[in-house]
Length: 403
Ligand SMILES: Cc1cc2nc3c(=O)[nH]c(=O)nc-3n(C[C@H](O)[C@H](O)[C@H](O)COP(=O)(O)OP(=O)(O)OC[C@H]3O[C@@H](n4cnc5c(N)ncnc54)[C@H](O)[C@@H]3O)c2cc1C
Image (cartoon, rainbow, N blue to C red):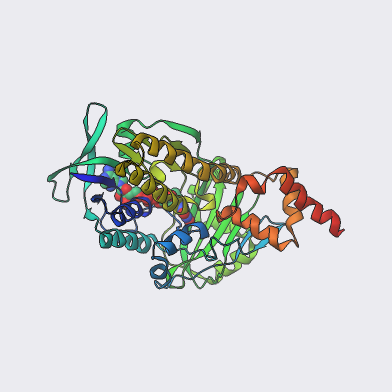
């Protein structure tokens, strides 16, 4: 019997397994995929809050050594208003990275194995085993179709937004939002970019993130309302959107070469209750949010950290497991709900409301507060504190003082 079985071995599951193994627990990590694997839909930017965790875990050097450029510069361009700077660092860690998933997920799986986790790839979990209301294990099949059955004190679903674990336990969903926007992206060579670039137009958006081996991820976004028309001719719509909202990026793309197929999608946003008797959820299985602010990996790494702490408290008897997991849900939600709401607001690509525009205009020529604003997206600055009346009035008053 294991202390924990973790289903899903990417940024949430492999991180959790690694952390639990480092604390001395007996962990089984399973995934239907085999690694390295690129079969997850993601543009894979990791913000400073996330790269700081990778640094603390001793993995950031491996990411940087994979020919993945560090990025301290970040801008958001609203067409007639551009906020350009360096987000407030996380404990001095000032770089975001955009590692390909076939690299990042493999680094995490290897780190889990090095910490003592038993990693089994090619295992398709099909059901949870139980004793009354309590989850006691998993059953599934391996690559040869042979049955696999294992038991544990807790089964963790790190199995993504369509989580089998969440479905099996009927985890309660809350604060759900419909699909708000759709994105299509691809990988380009000879499209120079040295910063995280985000463009927010009216009912449209675009972005560029430099990734491994000199390639740049370039994507465009459309509202859910317009997305159906886009699908018919992705390339034309993509180029038209770049031309309209970001001529400078469009020009670089015209001079570059597309090195991959079109990728993309549209997902709903929701939170799920992340624990119950014998089970827990982490990463997208627990909170899935619109990808327009690229927070999923950063969130997954933090969730894994919080859940590892909670399970340690429960296993070690420091407090009852139920109480430790309730605390995990509270910590998770306190960290994620503000960025979840801000992301859903941005994902509508609606014109900026007048008070928001006034605040953003007040940030121009105010580099320290611009950096703090960019830190909201990098998850290094508290959203409630930044938007608190007192802070907003302080920022607005700096403009009246200047003029
Ligand atoms: C278009 C798009 C762009 C995105 N861009 C970004 C971005 O730039 N930055 C960012 O941070 N996030 C981004 N995201 C979000 C990010 O991809 C997710 O938040 C992240 O992958 C969640 O990680 P996870 O480990 O929770 O789950 P996943 O990465 O979904 O991994 C789940 C794993 O579980 C395994 N699994 C599932 N079911 C089973 C089963 N029954 N048995 C065994 N194994 C199973 C799967 O094989 C998979 O390996 C984007 C998402 C989308 C849709």
